[in-house]
Length: 266
Image 1 (cartoon, rainbow, N blue to C red):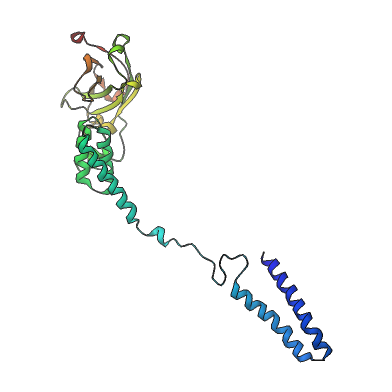
Image 2 (cartoon, rainbow, N blue to C red):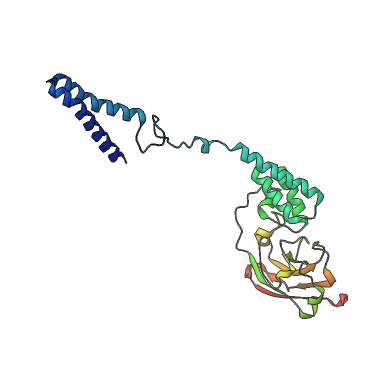
């Protein structure tokens, strides 16, 4: 485009020069002709500088260069919007306090915003409903959990054929490990909908309920798989649960647990 522009300028200049030069040649005004010849290119160049390049977006203005000043500035509007959504979630949970997943999301959101005291309170409610997160649990003790240890117990949980008539897809399966010796509080907890049965599972430190009581902290555990209808891990539905034998954590065993109704509930 720029080359075509200059060709057109040259053609127009030549035509204009022709119209002007012919009378001057006849009248033998060579000095004036010389002035015209010099002036036309100068005038053309002046017009070009005034109007700008044909390829430029705006005449008479320098090319617009993008600036990253705005992108580097703190996005206070976005931060305020996130905080507003988090506060809205907190308000909703006042009406529905049994939503453990939302309590966990709220705790993570508070931590992201640096509201650590509120994160601790929200996580306590999530953990009570079976939703666990080792990094959030670490806030209580001031630790910084950046990963999980190699301690792990994996396995499969299935439902005995005679127990299937008692279970709804909306029921909840809790899979948890308790230390053989020590506190009855689980050292790892996993929560899944009964609709996912049979379930392959893996228990590790990321599922600890508190930072100072993890799977890697104990030597032996018993793993339990239990079905509940209320979502409360302590309320067993129709006695439907399965327990492993004593498991040594260091052995990384793979377990097979079959949930069936206990004798007292039949």
